[in-house]
Amino acid sequence: MSSDATRIGVLGGGQLGQMLGLAAIPLGLECVFYDPAPASPARMVGRHECAAWDDHDALARFADAVDVVTFEFENVPAASLEFLAARKPVRPGVRSLELTCDRVREKEFLRSVGVPVQPFAALASAQDLDLALATVGPHGVLKTRTLGYDGKGQRVVKSAEELAPAWDALGRAPCISEAFVPFDREVSVVAARALDGSTAVYPLVENLHTRGILFRSVAPARVPDALADAARAHARRVLDGLGHVGTLALEMFVADGTLIANEIAPRVHNSGHWTIRGARTSQFENHMRAVAGLPLGDTSMDGPAAMINLIGGLPATREILAIEGASAQLYGKEPRDGRKVGHINLVARTRDELDRALADAEALARRVNRLS
Ligand code: AMP
Image (cartoon, rainbow, N blue to C red; front, top):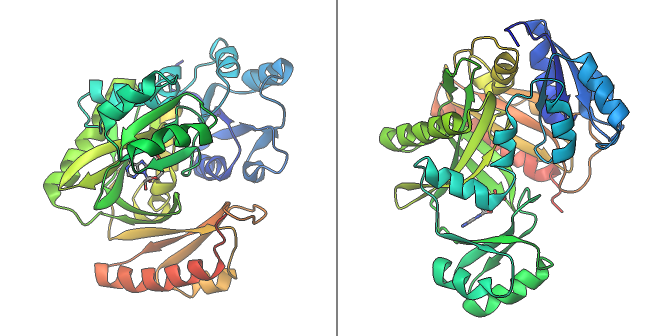
């Protein structure tokens, strides 16, 4: 495929798809979204192919209608992806999905490209429990290998005796047992790689989660420059190691001044939403540029920026806009406990100005947010 892809097929039609679709319009790109859910937020910004993942007629129609396929949702069934990959280029490649949808393979990959991870062990049968304890120690986190998100499918284990019951509670599914990291802060790097292998890496982001769901991202993270540079170098290793085309996020812990990678999201990511206002080119635009074979845009920022998630409820839009430097991004989703329905982006000239706006935005979000 040359650099003239203009019709982009997006697997998944959630808010990430919606923001990809919005970024596509000024680039002259047209999106078609594939999503089994009829009320997909992305249907407002492109054609929506509403069909089941195993509907081969619909998948074939979708493949015919686009030049290239990408995704905003990484749990696309492997068979559907294979079906599409036989017909149109899939960007990022299947390798990016295969190595990140399974937490054990993901950690093995991270280690293989020189990105530090905590001790971990695979847990598939009762015989593995002892080895997991010996490798990880008594204080760990047990997570299902696949399909976990926003802290779902995981249990914190605080002693050797708690491991077997925690595994029972996860239905004895194939799991990863990993050491608990007593982190000082959580950070992420959002970065993109173009078809020609060139990369564009955003400033380091500091994230705060509430009950496993991202609540706040602030960029640039307040860490020493050397640590931020190391984190960004890790993201480049991941991009190159995967041969990724498009945007991804590498989530890491900072513990005792060192970085430990937690996971890779092989797609645009919630911790990069601030780039819509806060960076010269958003993560969504850079993803679309990469997928279409276009050159990547500048990732630098003109001042500090932040994002606050609206989860399970929305304030009046005018309350968001009353905050200095704030913009609203509402996804058009029916509010439900624990569901991300929008976010507030903040840009400022100085860190003090950002901190004042953050205090207002956080108070507003805390008033309306409903976590499950
Ligand atoms: P994950 O689904 O892996 O992104 O985990 C969700 C959240 O759980 C993370 O953002 C952390 O706040 C916490 N967490 C996950 N794994 C660990 C770990 N090994 N040690 C400490 N906290 C963790």
